[in-house]
Image (cartoon, rainbow, N blue to C red; front, side):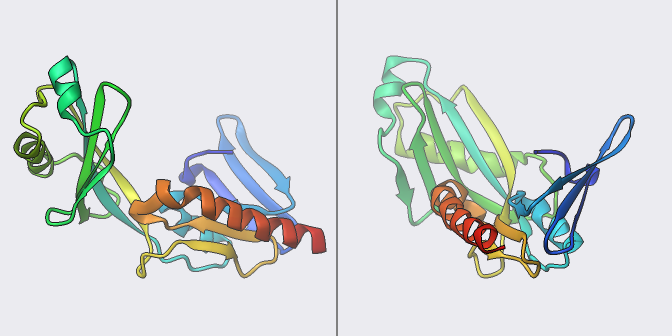
Length: 195
């Protein structure tokens, strides 16, 4: 169930969990055996409702997707993922006709505005490193990465026996998502078997 955080109320007594959803015709409460909180930057507020402190902060990350509209651009873009350690930029090829470049981050609360001064260096980097790529068709993006202070995700049990967390992956969300889902799945399975 994926619903905006401001429309959700969570409660657990340790054996049964409830999710109350504000809908147009009133509030509806659903009951579950347990809850897994994996809600990105909203995990902090959900955890607080459940009596846990999950110290996630939104770190805004920027990226660009460069459309590769012609054969020269497509052959000039790398086909493997790259990490430029000096500039702290990473890249990945997205099929035949797209190239993603990501790198900057800022602490700016829950603001998702896209700043041109953060996008320009990404485009300049592509022009400098891969001059054969046409950068006239660039799609900018900014999103909030759920970051814990120690940069490690919160995976496992909460204070209550039927509350679990899989959140706080920061900039490694795609990289860690499969393994942490498997980890928390094992914890949930073990908890529900013994309950």
